[in-house]
Length: 88
Image 1 (spheres, rainbow, N blue to C red):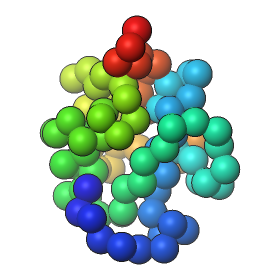
Image 2 (image 1 turned 180 degrees about the vertical axis):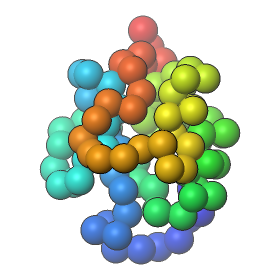
Image 3 (image 1 turned 90 degrees about the horizontal axis):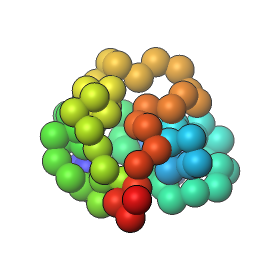
């Protein structure tokens, strides 16, 4: 969200899977992915704008956006956004 150029290993990868959007700590899960840095303001921006939903091609509900807010996500991999693509 901040467009900083950091090594992939320093970023958090979110992946759209069959179960929904999950955090990918390995960077090897199959699916459409997007990267976020660890800055709270980037997670806040991901929750408040449509940039992440466009990147992952999913619809974010209010509940999904709440789960994206900084400090809400604890330990990967967990489903943070229920499965619902834009094309459903």
